[in-house]
Image (cartoon, rainbow, N blue to C red; front, side, top):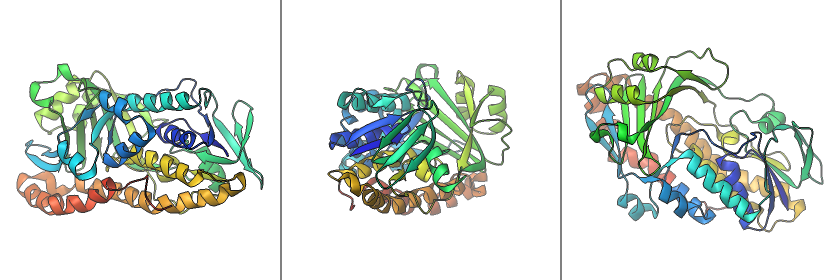
Amino acid sequence: MHVLIAGGGIGGLAAAVALLQRGVDVDVYEQAAELKEVGAGIQISPNGNRVLDALGVFEPLRELSCDAVRKEFRLWNTGRPWPMLSLGKSAVETYGYPYLTVYRPDLHGALADRVRALKPDAIHLGSGVAGLAQDAEGVELQLRNGQRVRGDALIGADGVRSVVRNTLWGPTDPAFSGMVAWRGLIPMEALPEHLRAPVGTTWIGPGGHCVTYPLHRSKILNFVATMEGRQWPHNGPSAPGTTAECLQDFAGWHDDVQTMIRLAPSLLKWALARRDPIPQWTQGRVTLLGDAAHATLPFLAQGAVHSIEDGLVLARCLEGVATDGAAAALQRYEAARIERTSRMVRGATANTERFHSPELATEASAEAYLQREWSASPIFERYHWLYIYDALTAPI
């Protein structure tokens, strides 16, 4: 079996590692001339770390990351804290693995190193996808550089604007959600002491929220602040922003939020895209993985984690399969993953309203709202099914 993977992001590289571990030959085709990730933070919950351990990258990544002791809410104007999830030792006791906050380039680099350790020439840079064709014997990937490569199966791991997906089903790119996210990385040493705690904090308020957590051995604070009801006049998914502009968006928010905005060395604005779950990932010998299959708003912190899960389940479905069984194996992979990922996408969308509720406008109404929506029982219902999942043993 020879599998082609379009896209060298986190999901594509995770799939490559899992396949190579199982004796499946893999080539990864990445459009960028250099293999790197945008410097930002991601959260890897226990279900994701369970997979990373199986891929052989968990321990080195853990050394570079942070093990948050808890996640908490803070009210946008008063700063009043509200417990959300107990992490640290509690997460390990319940799920077997910790909840890590990870610098995205650290994870991407660890996966790339693992791929190259298993097959040194597996990753092909400067190889963006132009199109594809398939027949009864295999699939051909057409690259922008004019090259054509052939394999037994093709995995479209080429992101939210997937060429593979759009070639199979026509234009299906996600639409702008009306929300803009401000992102910045703040040196931890620049922050006042009380903002350096190993805690994941979500500031919630009417129409917006702000997420912060430590990265890279607690040397960096990741800052992401989202506001709804915005326009996006820029070309591309991101654009530079100014401190003054961000402060204006979060006028009236707590001094801690204002302080973090002022201390961020630079700020980028990102247009958040959304798309309802799609009903089909697979056609013949071609399927989708990660954001190409289940683009999501980032409000469950599961986008990267579900891409990693996809990669392991895909490899399990293809392990030991003869070349003429590729299409059936990809159908099994889709059947094993599509319901879970669709539920994740819908849950992330639902959290938009929970983070931005107008009931958060005053402390009195916020108290009743948080008790109703964010007490222990609804939190357990919303998150336990995500974290308990085991991609190594889930039915395929």
